[in-house]
Image 1 (cartoon, rainbow, N blue to C red):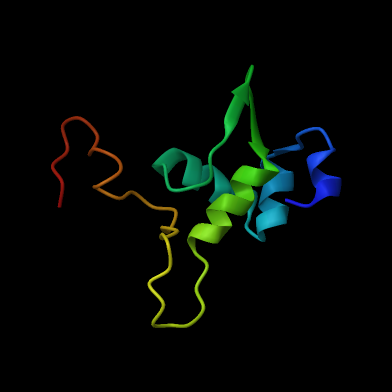
Image 2: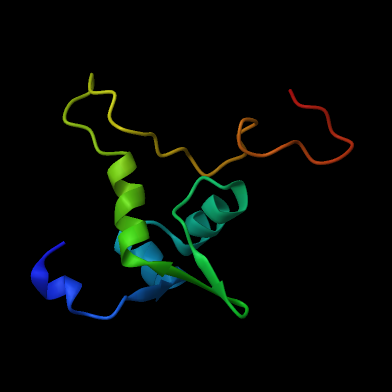
Amino acid sequence: MSAALSQLPPRYLRTPEAARFLGLSGRTLEKHRIYGTGPRYSKLGGRVVYRLEDLQAWVELGARASTSDPGVGQVLPAKRHPSIMPAPAGQARR
């Protein structure tokens, strides 16, 4: 982090601002929250906020140098993943 940024107070973005920062729609970011595939967030009362550092860290998970680069992590699509979320009660996994 640059010296100038480290002197600023932490910056928090609401969902629409965070989505614009990431180049996603607000709805996609909401789906990532539901499925547990998105960046870390905090709840302040009823409001969802994202720290800039958490958004940047999530983007870095998907960073690659080439198509054969395995990278350090994986950014999953905004959908249900059995390894992350259990199936709803009364429904079998496919």
